[in-house]
Length: 311
Image (tube, rainbow, N blue to C red; front, side):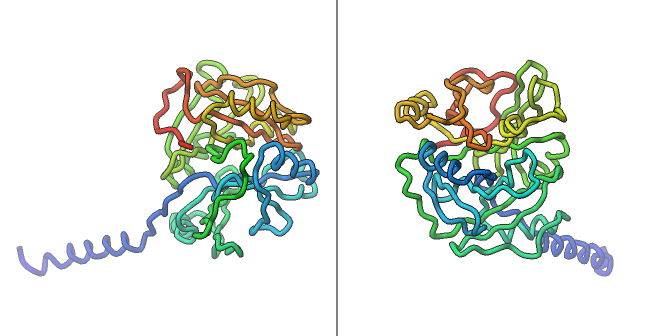
């Protein structure tokens, strides 16, 4: 072959290589960071998260009007004042930890997703940015500070937020962002009735915490009713703390008087995924679910397709 005929092919190869080098690699997404919720009564909410849940109260580097209730060095519940005209909504955003907030911002921008021009830097050394998912939910990605330390919360009912749930209308639409773009991985799916899909669990790409699509409310298959109540929405928009034994955790709360005045189910139960669970609700109706790390019964609907989170 003549040398000149090799030049175009060589140039094409160089062009492809250069393009590959300029496309950012997605940094690792390493788990749940937090759920940010609203409060209409700061004192009642404070009592719930400190006295009942046992989390450590901290200042909020992201919002001077907010408060953090920490369960570990990198996981917490963020509580913000209820905005005017908020209606029944009590969730501000869900957030995930990443090894590089700036790297992930550049990755999403390179993929054509609308992102802010820069990350925000906190006084604690953390960095974060926010985007909207396909259904308009605010999603935050947080790079925890290198010096993050475990909080002083010896009475915390658990130290690992294993999943968060959000109201979702269209699974396929949401998958274009979480699954296709970010690499979230299927974990489990199920429903209240066989053949009806109510919940879809998608694990973060580089760990075993997960996002739960809450596809319906009320009777299975009913969709999202226009008359949804604040309580119903709070059941969907929720967070879950992992437990070795939900029964033991429930007994700890009950025997310690930590369920007095708290809206709760009054008993533990077995979830459709074969994991024990117990539901309690903050003063504005956001559900806090205690859930066993591992299933003790066979799950309905689908098998687990990835490893469980660990303590």
